[in-house]
Amino acid sequence: MFRFTTGEKAGLYGAILQAFGAANERLETALGLDDVRARLRTVGWLDDVHDDDLQDALLKLREWQLLDVVQNHAENYRSAEEYERRNLQYSLTRRGEAAFAGVEHALSVLASTGALQTAVLEAITDRLDKLYVLLGDAASSDRRVFTTLQELEGHLAALLANTKAFNGELQRLLRAEGADLATFREVKASTVAYLQEFLVNLDQRGQAVAAAVERVEERGVGLLYERALRGADLPPGVDGDPAFAWLERRRARWEGLRAWFRPVDGARPRVEQLHDVARRAIVTLLQVLDRITESRRRSSSAVQDFRELARWFAAAPGEEDLHRLWSAAFGLGSARHAHLAHPDPELVPSSASWAEAPPVEVSALLRTSGSTERFTRTGKVRDIGGIKAVRTERARKERAELQAAWDVLGTGGPMRLSGFGALDHTVLERLLDLLGRALAVRPDADGSRRAVTSDGRVEIVLRTLSDGGRAVLRTSRGTLEGPDYLVEIRNPATIVEAAG
Image (cartoon, rainbow, N blue to C red; front, top):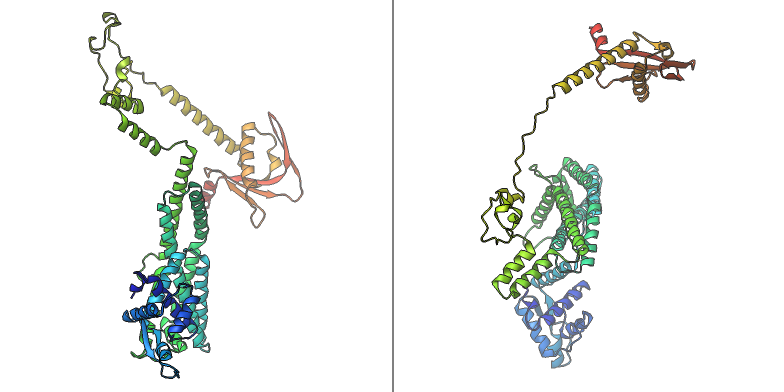
């Protein structure tokens, strides 16, 4: 079917099929030799083609079953030459139409760039909601049901095509190498921003589509197909009733819609997989951007350093030079023991060479960690008994002070804040802590404020007084004056026990 795309005359074959495709758009189904030549100029074929070459090309396309030839008996011919030129007319076969459409689709795919469009998800939800309304209205037109279903399938096909194309472009972008670093970095940064914007509210949009699918299925998918089939007005086919094949295509596309948003078997919807792919791509792109930024920040990369070092190794004249180069580049020689000395340095003169000097003991840790063992006196274990006793006594004293403060502050019922009068400074601090907790909460319906300490042992109930009085509290460190309140400080556990 696609043999016309290869060979020496592939350009002419493609131009002829393009000419027939352009004629079909104008409802001209048959072209003669002169018509084909004129159409070639309109599709951009400007080279001069001899009649024999053009006829050979048309016959070759007919041989490949891409063109069909018929005789035009309705014309009046004035000469034999005119009869030969205008009698035979060519038209595209079904095979030719499919071949031309396939090439056009391939070219459009090569020229297209995929996109992740949230507007398509919203359009799918809108079409599903419209189908739900139409199915619920028996008086609605079947043709509107058909056109709405066609629009829904068109949006779904656009979603699938754009998603596949964008994912392919994204994977190629992740593998791209050798591009201009500035352009490469700009494209990747823009892609990250694009993906982040797409992921905003993607879960909510996917759930909205799933809910719309469920609503339509409640009305009945079978009813939807039945009404859409009536609205389609399918023409009778030569091979039989086309309704069966039409319904099978509708069911397959509905199953594809369910697979994306509401799978029947409880599997994970593909829209969530798209969410994962986008997130992984963002992470990968950010990592690549970090590496690009780091490589641009450094004067040379580690890869370039190792390549240069490899060139030096290859150019080294001898083995000794290779060893010196290795030691200078990596510093992995075993000379860490050079600082070690003999236990009695006076027995070994300083002029003695290493080969003649007696050996010294080398620690096993020197090669692994770069340090030797240091044997010192074992540290003493601290006696913390005294510290524990001091801390225990301090905790007991604090608990006693706290209990004494609560005993003083316990009101036994509502009383004015000014009724406390003079207080110990520690008790005043506890009282101010309770007041702060109560004033930090919102008042109840009756205007009272309730708060409990962090250990739950003490509860305070604070109510505002209508007379607007002032409370004065005195301690050994000074006087505190503020608004007067009706205060009730109690132990919730004691209240529960008394109620029991």
